[in-house]
Image (cartoon, rainbow, N blue to C red):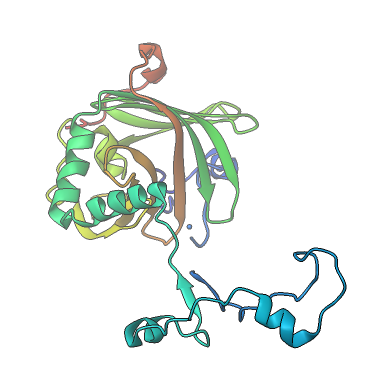
Length: 292
C-alpha cells in the first residue's frame, strides 16, 4: 500500500517487492409537470332512448314540446382569459414528503461553513475510541482487496487482509509494521512517516497538523482534502469522505508522492465492540519512534 510503504528503496530486498505484488503497495492512476388540452364538449347524442316509444312526430312540434334549456350565461372576461380551451392546462404535481425531507437535509449540510465542517471532522477523530469495520481497498490498477480494520485510538491499528492476500499492517502505538505472512518479512516505520496519522493521533487538528486544501459539500457526502508533507518520500494528498452530517468516516483516498492512489472504503462500522489487544502486537518489534 503506497500510503505506508516508502516510494522507492534502493536496497529493498526481493521480499519487499513481492510484498507489494501481493496487493498492499498498489499503484497506478486514480473514484415534470404534465399537461393536457381539454377536449371540446361533444354534443349530446340525439338518441330516442330518453323518450317514450310512440309514433315519431314531426321535427318542429317535437322540438317545441321539449322544455326550454336554461339560457347560457356568458363567462366573465377574467374567467374566459383563465380557461381558454385552446391553451394547455398545467397540472402542478403534489410535493413528495420524502423529497422535501431530503432537500431539507441537503440544505442543512450546505449551510455548514468550511470551518464548521473541519471542526466536526476534528471532533469525530478526537471522540473516536475504537472502531471495527469491513474494508475494501482499491489500487490504481483496479485490484480489490478486502478485510477487516481494527482501530483503537490513540496509536493502535490493524488491517487484516482476506485470503489470498498474505499481508497485514499493524500499528502498536509506536511503530507501523508491514508484514508478509508468506514470505516472513516485516518492515517497520515511524507512525509520523505514514499518512495514517489522522487515524492514530490522540489529538487530531486538521488544518494545523495537516494542511486543509479544500472542502466540498455534496448531497450524499462531504469531502475534506488534505496535504501531509511529513510522510515518507514527500507530500501525500489525502481526501477524507464523511456522511453529510460529518458524523461518520466512510472512506479515504491517498495519493502518494509518486502519484499512486489507494482507496479504502469502510462498511459495517462498529464503534462499541471490544478489541483483543493481542491484535496490535508486532512480533519482535523494537521501539523506533512515538505516535505523539
